[in-house]
Length: 480
Picture 1 (cartoon, one colour):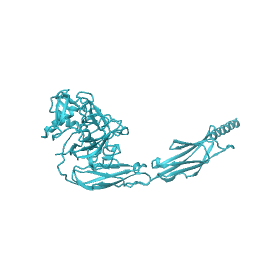
Picture 2: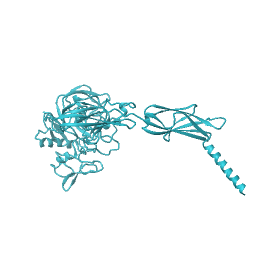
Picture 3: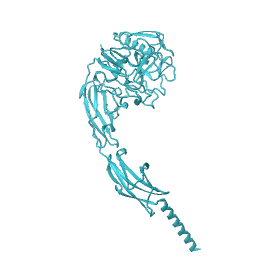
Picture 4: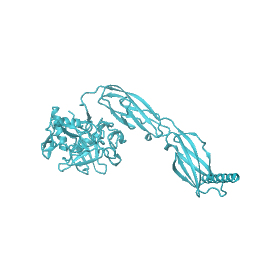
């Protein structure tokens, strides 16, 4: 009985040994590199190995290659060699695994390796090096460098207030300081491997001239090519300097205007409805007999641009603001129509040409940016498919003139009657067609994709009585 029991145990052991051998029928023998080696991030790492088999016929199958347990390739030709571009991996420890498979049999081997790297060199220039609070400064990190990455592969974050929070991203950005004094600007450059370097620089800002109104940017007269970038264009000359609101009119600002109007759900002046109060997505509602901010899923703050405003609602705001500041209103408005006095010193909507010139940076344009102030949309534009509403104004960085949100956030009403294509030719101070029903809107809005044309060239149109969550406005006036 005892002998029988021992024979059974021996048989089970042999069978288990045979199963283990069948499940690991091949050995992976690495010739290079060694296990637990350390290598520089970004270099090509060569893995070379052979497959040993107990079978006299040798190995005739395929080898699956895994990096960090994810299959990346399959090899079928000996000698086995795999070249890994380590620039696609993060710094730190990784695992290379080769799994040999032939006629249901398999075997595997793995190596551990660590990627190290050099931190990028962070540096930036400031143009001008010192100026006034009227000045928009240009910050460029183009002289930053890294041995493993090109400049376009790195991330650039800027802290202009020296408060530990990043104010914007992008290799080249614009910023305006509204307080005089010495300002410490911080830049962090991060390479693709996750290594980051910070540097700081000082900007000296003196008091401004006081001639530019607070919250406005000076757009000087000049010439440019106004193009829809699909073949039609106008060579435009603008002969007037104007002040352009640096941000879209906010909910808070429009509430101040509505507070002077009769309280009802169809606020109307001159027979035209101003704003779609009472609709589910309107940022303004009525409570206890007064207009109030309606915090909802679409609007997170009273500093968001006002929307759901008709074209006439924008014009009436302009006239009200002009009167509040003792200026001459520009508009004469009746039910379903309006005219503009272009010599009045009050507030008005920009013409489409004025809007585009300002978005492009006017005579201070650095280059032909795709977006207002940058080719890198996240630096300047509230544009994201995940956004269901606009963000507070000035959430992103400005363009060369210190103007915010001219790409994304909300469309902006312009004065002009919409027409397309442009009439090729030379034109001075255009104010649009004299007939037609739709008004022009510019700039794109939050629910979009910059790669689909949401840029300086983005145009749209709507009826002047339409009121949409994606449409607001900003104001301008003559610089006199």
